[in-house]
Image 1 (cartoon, rainbow, N blue to C red):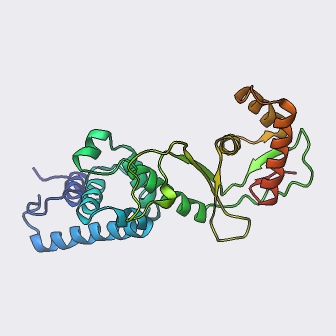
Image 2 (cartoon, helix red, strand yellow; image 1 turned 180 degrees about the vertical axis):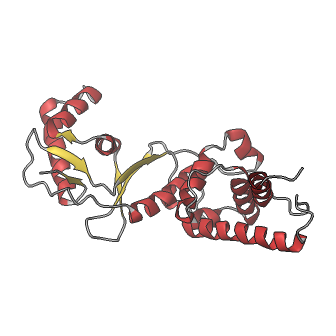
Image 3 (cartoon, rainbow, N blue to C red; image 1 turned 180 degrees about the horizontal axis):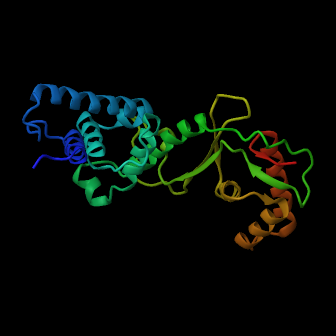
Length: 253
């Protein structure tokens, strides 16, 4: 019985994704032609990955990099067909690698965090700035604060910002590395700002939902009961003012 078109597509897709080029399921097609097509697909995907994760590629050996790319192509079930989303799909794939898989392939423990850090910069670069946001002129208890719509707050256990071929971490940080990545309105430059744990928590809350200044203060009182309320309120006000001036926090009419 002849195979239907959908079955042929699935067989071809599985073969193209696989690492073995010696056998293919189509006897009536010249092997050389299929091999060229397969190599073209793998090379195109690797080209996107090299461009999106230059540091990661540099710090891994050629064998590790090739193996990682091949496993990604063979095993990952992508949610987007767009080439521009290959980097995000790659990060999702790395998130699924458990410790036995990582150890089996001699991959570093900071693999996912470094890839995530590199991808965040790309996401922020192409993020849309919400034009309905406006600068904060006066901060009151009822001022509703919105995080810059391009911004992302990330927390890492490894020093991802300083990883290089000559500087590879062998243990987690004593304190997590917290960073804000964002663009100012109308700007193309991506900015990085290291944060302390408390500040990262404040911005992470606003990344989920806008809150009034009063709500932020009440949340901090719960999280840091040992802090004197007046000092906490004063510190929060100074923090919010600073972030408003840096185009990190906004409000709406």
